[in-house]
Image (cartoon, rainbow, N blue to C red; front, side, top):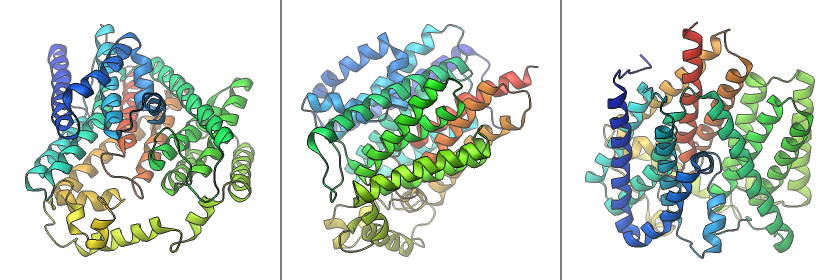
Length: 451
């Protein structure tokens, strides 16, 4: 069963608020460890008011706008702490979702099995703190997951079944992504980029920074595919090419690999273009990306082809995966505990300040065992099943089908990125785009079964 129905709307509202309040409490507890609670409270007040005045904009920033948009303003204010960014994004999403829900008196929240598996995951992460070898870092990891992924996931709950709202969110999202791309281009023009360093600015880490432009490329290409207006198609293609250039300059492999995988899925299974147009579009993007990589910013080529010498990152991943595989037979049921992966490493890994294996399956198995990995698989299976089932219906409109296909492609992009980059707290896109799939498939299911 993919839907767990609660008939009383009042109980749904109470459950929705309790879930968010519980996450807010965990956020506050984590904040006390990292920063003074009063300082963070002052920083998030503007986000609270902004989300109340423009809830759609707040959700677009926190779900599709990426982290770079908020980092631009944090950099101007001289705020460099990454955790403040996640607190701001979480609170922004939280209040945006609540305001949207209560402004729409006709909103009806549908809860699915994926939602309960998602809550189960948070419970497993939290219980893992009790036997963690590093509970302080584990608390910070859980708190980051809550504000970065848990809040936006449930903040999108009021949009389930609202095709117009989802389309509006995608419009706002691509506009915000375009702003960050243009700002980044300006920084490159003014400051330049060395061919032997990973470009980033606004105090952004290269990993999250690169994901921002991989997402911009992917979303703009999908909108280019589905748009009918010629001028909008040209604008989306130009934005995609601009984002590809920045992506090459940042030279982070995980988002590049994830983007390539997501584009393959899109053009093979979801694209509305004819085969010649698909080939032509891929050729343009590939040729442009190759030109930028070989003639302007060649460090990505170095990183993709070398595993030693200048390329420490690849060596580090091989090292992490070897350690991970050597520990698979120890505590297989419940794992070593939240944020305990570093304790498994040698002095080299601890000295390099490595904390996770850069692979979602190894991370879940080692830190939460078969229990955690099983809960993750159940969650992902529920999302995929609910996302693909409506596509089999012949009664869907073109808008419905396009929205669901875009959501599914974004989901697979995030899932591919989890194989080689980040941990469960920093891969916030996986949880957010899972919620997009549930929101868009919710609409299709109701429209298809009601006829």
